[in-house]
Amino acid sequence: MQSHIPQLQQSYADLTAALSSTVSDLSTIVTTKDISLQEKATRLSKEVQDRVTPLLDVVKRAVSEVLSRAYRETKVNGVPPAGNGSTR
Image (cartoon, rainbow, N blue to C red; front, side, top):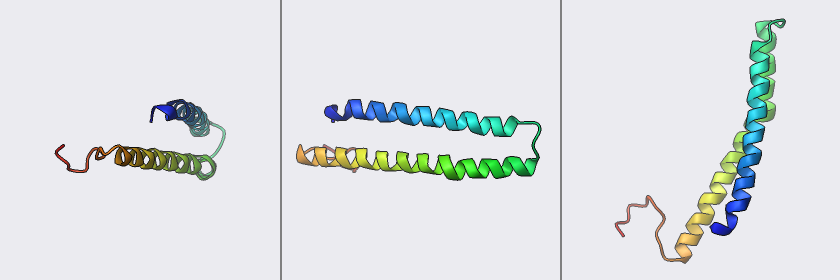
């Protein structure tokens, strides 16, 4: 697992930057005064569809990969994964 830390850190940094940018853009849409509420809703919906949903998919895949890798490594080392009810 230690060998994967740099990759995880870079993925976290990339995700943080993408989330920050997305939140900033969503905030700009919400606070813009010269567009109608309907236009704001349309723009927000498009941003969610184009940017938020793909980011969530990336997070979901990354977490699944980390959990799967951790499970495989603990299984190979003979240590049960945390939270499985074992009393070892």
